[in-house]
Amino acid sequence: MKSIVIYNSQTGFTKLYAEWISEAAGCECVSLKKAGKIKLSDYDAIVFGSWFMAGGITKLPWFKKQMPALADAGKKLIVFAVGASPAESPMVPEALAKIFTEDEKKLVKLFYCPGGLNYENMNGFSRFMMKMYAKALASKKDASEDDREQAKMIANSYDISDKKYIEPIIAEIK
Image (cartoon, rainbow, N blue to C red):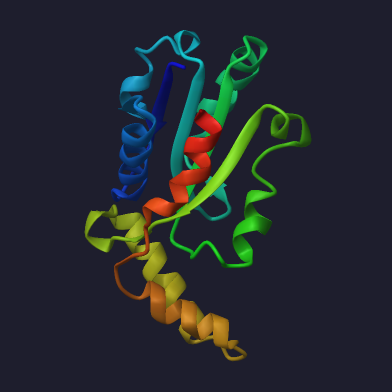
């Protein structure tokens, strides 16, 4: 089966997962910036990965535009989102459930991979927004233990990525 992984990464976590998937599946791996030159219909499985932010997957509209024609051609479609939250966080499935419409869910498999935060690689706006969010959580009057824990966690860079999260993606590709 000829497969490709296309990724969009800001701080490196999505790129890392894309490379792990590519290596494990023995398939091509390209950044979204280079994907415009690729004929996706030449592939049996197309994997798209990007970072998860504010309840959405960045650059997903690009992939959604491709989905109907690729699905009609019998292609296997897979999306993985890489976020700063641990996989066990209850907010992850809630947010992921809203990414695709019911019709789109019939065309694509969706996976979540925890990555982390890398403030050194973030653009200025993202860094500012994350710091403001951490500060808001920390200063919340009725902050829960989860709020305090999250504020502490996102105050600095961290890495919770793990190869184990690619296993179901690899199984889906094959």
